[in-house]
Image 1 (cartoon, rainbow, N blue to C red):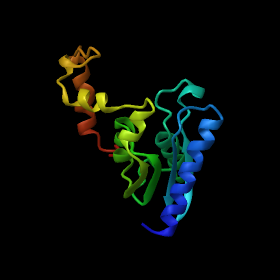
Image 2 (image 1 turned 135 degrees about the vertical axis):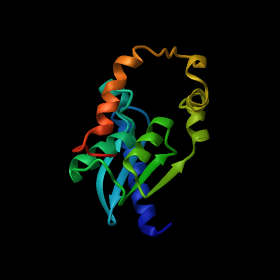
Image 3 (image 1 turned 120 degrees about the horizontal axis):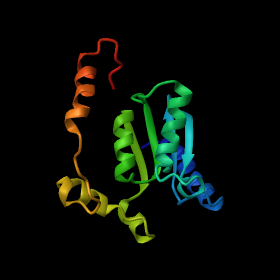
Length: 158
């Protein structure tokens, strides 16, 4: 960890405060950095946008991808004020960040009502055993689309 890393993390923490103070959502902020330069910033906007996916990390990732005109951020580092939830963790892996720094841990978030441990537990369960009903339907009708994708020559893999 360098002084520059600390600077970027402090900015993520400032964004968490800013978002909270503006009543945009929960107290979370994130910064995407490439080549020691901030590319995009975000804070939690779940309640202000009525979007449960508008977490700080996701808003920052969306902005970075738009600015850089790419869906992969493999040459970027993410600084986030709290250890990412399962959804954000998935987005981070899909974006292919080279590194993630976080300030607070899941346990810290749980103490203020943001406990995502149950989601991790749900992921490990078979679909039929989850709290929300997951029921397969029309697999045979959907399968040809996947088969067509598999044969598609001009596709963009990700």
